[in-house]
Length: 497
Ligand code: BES
Ligand code: MN
Ligand code: ZN
Image (cartoon, rainbow, N blue to C red; front, side, top):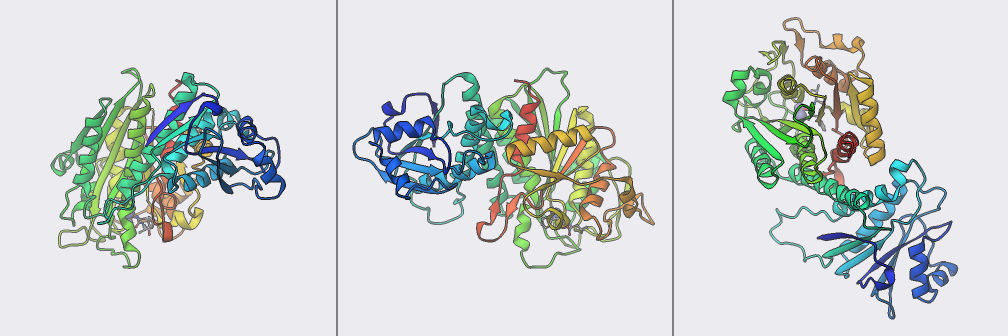
């Protein structure tokens, strides 16, 4: 798909399909008025007789005879006084749904002059262009590589988005949106890939490929022998039952000065989680292929960063392993010594995410991080607590937590903070080791984060539990690409560019 930004007048923009907005209540944007004039007042007439309600998310496709456009797609954007970025995004999704499988080979989208309510940071023309770019990429996504028959080829091949100018700020914003959308789609591809293909070694190859495609990324992969030498016995206890060896995948992006401390991202990369000897029930177990959703989001973010080239340094570490039961698998009751030296009594082999993450969190100390943000499909309890709308956020630093919450709010990829009070820590007390890997039923998301916090004492750290937000179950089953938008907003807001 070819995406461009243009400030050309609509009257001289030849296209198969012009897209304009009609509000349910309020003033028509300039581009809609222009289109209406060129159409001899047809839009006004349609509004008058009730065919054009302007209801948020409604669409009306009109054939056109005597204009530079073969069709006009009118998108309803709701009332001016109510319209928030989230409502605007709904209208964008409705538009993309029509364009996606329509007959138009190209389209000109004139929606960036629709006013929004809220902070300048989310309502400016630049932020609208960013959202348009991201939403287009996201909505045009399809995962068809494993179908033997490919669906009919999409007709739409070129999309032009109209802006008030073609200056650097607007272009950068639009491109950042596109890069974020592509990053999300990369994340979705990885999450959707079946677990017989997507194993730790395959994931490591994706990182090597990313480095090949982008000069600004350097990749290093540690194998089990190297991890053993570093003392990562906790991580290795998870892959012990699997025929697939674990990998520690490191990607480095250097956009800042060499002395700038890096932003470190850590991802849980369990390519399949059977639960191990503490075997999960069979129903829906296929969904545990997404247990590398944290890793996938790290990959997607690194790709988007490589394309956007902010002036910061970023290090990404993925702890990749497969959690399987077998004669060599870790048993409930086993005690391992983590890389930090702390010993862990493994009471449930299904609480494996924290076991791989804790060694990765110890490993990243060597980068002297500015902050460390880990992301993981860590607990079913997080879905019970927050459902599928908010990512769980836990942190040892209020400023970092607030910063991430604000980034999620701006990006429409929200998180909600849970407490990490000392009172919860005692649920991890073990009779035999420094700690046990489960804290019982109460506050499962918090005790999982408590476990991680013991390995993240030496830097500012936040944990994102994305168990409820990284994928959709049911009819729209598949990876969502979250929390790439949150992370991109956070990182770019620190790039000072
Ligand atoms: N990957 C799961 C968490 C999960 C469950 C994510 C459902 C998405 C949907 C994780 O490894 C796990 O099994 N956690 C256990 C922890 C428990 C044994 C303390 C859980 O949530 O039940
Ligand atoms: Mn598990
Ligand atoms: Zn898991």
